[in-house]
Image 1 (cartoon, rainbow, N blue to C red):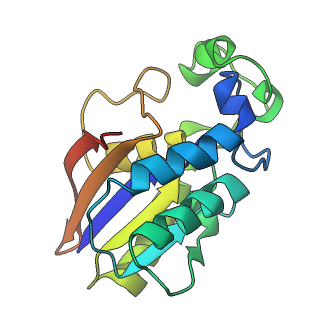
Image 2 (cartoon, rainbow, N blue to C red):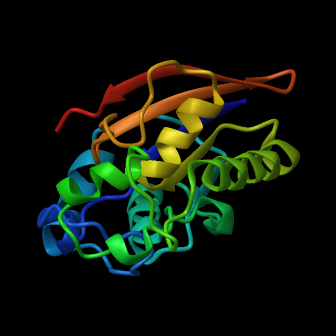
Length: 188
């Protein structure tokens, strides 16, 4: 089974380089245009499209579906919602680094362990329901970083690893093993 995973396209807060966490914003006009540009250049075949419950991921998944000739419903999986940044929401991304690195703590910030456990639960859902198919997951930066960590990739940092809105990650699931295969930027 192949799992393709991509970050949602841009919202107004992404464009402003601010944290939005679970704030449920739609794609901006630029984000919609960007998604069309990205998926018009994507040539993968998928049997299922999954998305985070946040509207920005679902909108991106719908745009992807139109280019991938995918006509089935998009499946929403709650476990792939973005990390809860708590009181960091709406702050510039640069101001979150001490908390994300663990240099300081916030009571309402979702811990790395909780996030990784939640994403592991999402992977179990994929394994149980989509194990014989090629699947596209549209989600969020910290979810993608968690997937990389869970696949055994080294030197992945929630604070410092950059996942762009046009980076496509490819994972393989074989015999209960979750393996990272590649990351490539979809050319515009």
